[in-house]
Image (cartoon, chains in turn brown, blue):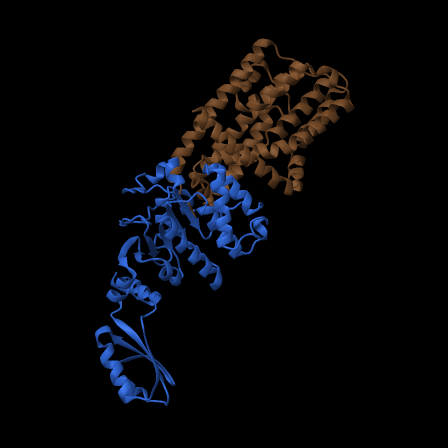
Length: 268
Length: 303
C-alpha cells in the first residue's frame, strides 16, 4: 500500500515537472486566465464605495479589502479547467490514450493542475501582498490565520477539483458537459461569497449556505484569513470541507467506473 | 424538434461475431473496409472499450479490468492519435514512460539507444514533437510504444500518411521487434504492402463479422483461383486472336494481361510462347487489394 502510494507519487511528481515545462511555453495563456480572476477586486471597489468609511454588516473598510483580496487569492489558487479537459478527451476519444497507461488518468489531470499552480502561486502571492501593503491592512493578519488559511486552501482546491471532475465525467452521458460551466460559475460566485460576503446574508441563509461546497471552498478560507471565526466555527468549517472532499471523491469514482462502461472511444 | 425530444439510442453492433485466437509470436493482419470494426476490436482487446456481450481474454486477463500487469504487457499504436506530448521532446515522453512502466535505468538506456539507432532518431528525440515531420513523429510514437517491451502489440494503421521509404523503415522495424522478442502483433492497415510484408495470417472482417481467417496464401488461392499472365509482344496482335488463348483483362498495344486458371497456366504459357511474337512474359498473383475488394463486394451483392 505504502509502496503503491510511493510509486504513484513518483510518477505524479514526474508529470508535474513535465507539465511545468509545458506551461512555461504558454505563459501568455496563464496571464489571460488570471485576468478572469479579477472579479473579486472589482467587487472590493464597489463595497468600499458602499461602506464609505463606515461599517456595513460588521465589515469595516479593511475587512472588505482583506475579504476580497483573500477571495481573489482563493479563486486564483483553485482555478480548475479539468471540466474542459475531460469533456474534450471523452468526446473526441483522446481519453483512450490515457487509458492505455498502467496508471489512473486522474494522476495526469491533477499533475497538470498542480504544475501550473506552482508556477502561478508566486504571482498570486505577489499581487495579494501588494494589495495588503498598499492598503495597509497587514496588521489584521496573524500567523495563525495564515496557517489556517493555507490548510483550508488545500481543502478548497480538493473540493473544486473534484466537483469539476464530476461534471466533466458527465461527458460520458451527455453531449457537452461544458454546458455546466456557466451554471457552476454562477453558483460559485453567488453562493460562495465572491459578490457578497456570506455573513451579510440573514443568519439562517448563511447557516444553510455554509454547508454547501461553494462556501466551503471560498468563504470559509477567506474568513480564516480575516480571523473572525471562533474555534467551534473553525472546527465546523474544516469538517464540512473534509466531508465534501470525501463525498465528491466517492461520486467521482462512481461516475468514472460507470462512465467507462459507456465510453465509446470516438474517432479512433 | 422531434429528434430533440425523443432521442433514441440505437445499438449498433460494431463487432458482432468475431472470434479468434492468437498464438504467441504470431503476426496477424486484420483487414476490412472502413467501419468494419477493426479499430473497435483493437480497443476491446486493449481494455479501452467494454464489449456489451461476449468474452475477451488477452494474456489471461479480462482487458477491461485494466490490470496493471496487463497494461504493462501490451501496447496499442493508433496511427491517427498520438501518445507523445505535443509540446515536449520525445525523450521527455520516453522518460515519463520509464517511470510509469517501472523500467530499470540500465534497461532504459540500452533500449533507447537501440531504438534510436535502429530508426535513426538520434537528432530527432530532443526536438519538440510539434516540430517533427509526420514520419519522424510516427517513428518516435512506435519507439515509445515499444519502450516497455510489450509482449502483445496492437498496431492500428501504423504507416498511415508516411512516404514509401518511411513505411518501409517502420515495417522492417516491426518485423525486427517481432523476431527479436517473439512479440505477438495484431495489425490493421490500409496498405496491403504492410500486411504482405509482416503478416503470415490474415483475418478479414466485414460488417462486424469475420469473413476469412487463415494464411495470406490461402486467401489468395481460395478467393482468386486465377493468376495474372502479363505478356509483352514484339509486334501487335489483334485482340480477337488473343481472346482465343484466355480471358484478356487488359489490352494496351503491345502489353496484354490474361487471367488464367492456376492449373491451366503451364499449358497457356507454352501455347503463347509457341504461337505469338512474345518479347517478355511474367506470371503474377492478383493484387491482394483486389482479391479482398472482390471478396467484400461479393458479400455485399449477396446480402
